[in-house]
Amino acid sequence: MNDIALPLPAMADKAPASEAGPAAKRIVVAFGFWVFLLSDIVMFSALFAAYAVLVRNTADGPSGDQLFSQTSVAVETACLLVSSYTCGLMSLSIEARRQLGTYFWAAVTFALGAAFVALELSEFAGMIARGATPQRSAFLSSFFTLVGCHGLHVTAGLVWLAFMMLQVNLRGLRDNVKRRLQCFALFWHALDIIWVWLFTVVYLMGVHP
Amino acid sequence: MTDTPYDLAPGDTKALVSRPEAKLSGVLVYTIGLVLAVGLTATSFWAANTSQLWGPGVALGLAVLAIAQMGVHLVFFLHITTGPDNTNNVLALAFGILIVTMIVIGSIGIMSDLSHMMPMQSGSMGMHMQH
Image (tube, rainbow over all chains, first blue to last red; front, side, top):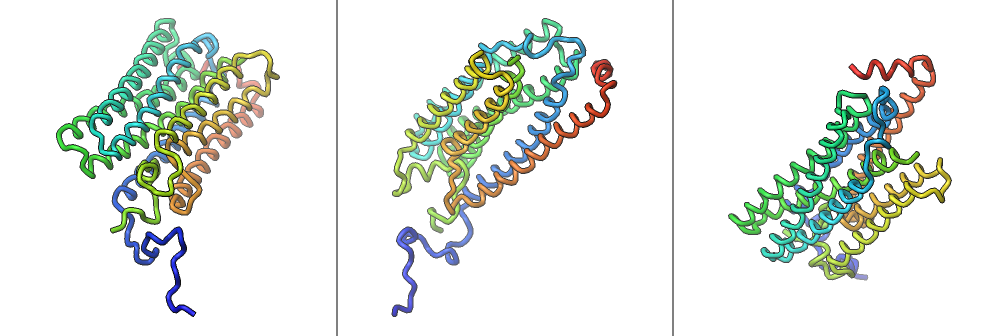
């Protein structure tokens, strides 16, 4: 009989858990940001609940199926989905330490995100021009709060991405810059998950008779 | 300090790039995710506009499609797995989903119950909400 327990084949390259020490900083940072994102999603769930409760209270004003254009929603969805994909490719470039690739995919992500925000703003402007302002009805108040809050998050993400590219330019892909970019990627993917629920609940269920 | 520890960060691309046991390249993982997400989104838009489906069931179908797409995003974009190195991420996610479900289902249930109990109020409700 052998006194020393042999490590399992899969664990052969690792120290045992008792000797591994604390997790690396990038894991702790990303996990903390993950918890923040979940709390952000809890906040969005309250806005979703408010919207679902108030969606019928149009106060004889315009309702969703009169206001929403499915074409612009489809284009917005495509912009955000593809920008989530290019954000993933940016993460791969960062991990492979390819600075040019990082800039390129960041620029594509930024452009698609900016296109999304521009489309959403023009949609809002069109609604307000037709008298569908947030003050018009409880439905519109909750609509502008919910969709506008997501739009604000996307805008904040764009500002964050621009600052991160500045940091990559000035400091290079150092460990702390990489950690921030990792958090940005998490943020961007989470926004896309929220948008999936937004276009389903607000636009598709609202338009469906 | 080892860099292949017992935990993985959510959205960790390092696992895609440098792990020897990773079977798919990183680009392929993201591309599969994109293709699946586009397919589910297209199905959602089709289901909302078609007249071939039973009308009252469409809303439920759309919710199912959204849950499926959320799963696709979590697996292929955020790289949440069921592996032992992801336990912390999955537990946090499960707690978040519990709270979200409680808020949404609870609010909708309570408010629809209230409007059933006060049928006369429903007409003037909209009037109050204007101000």
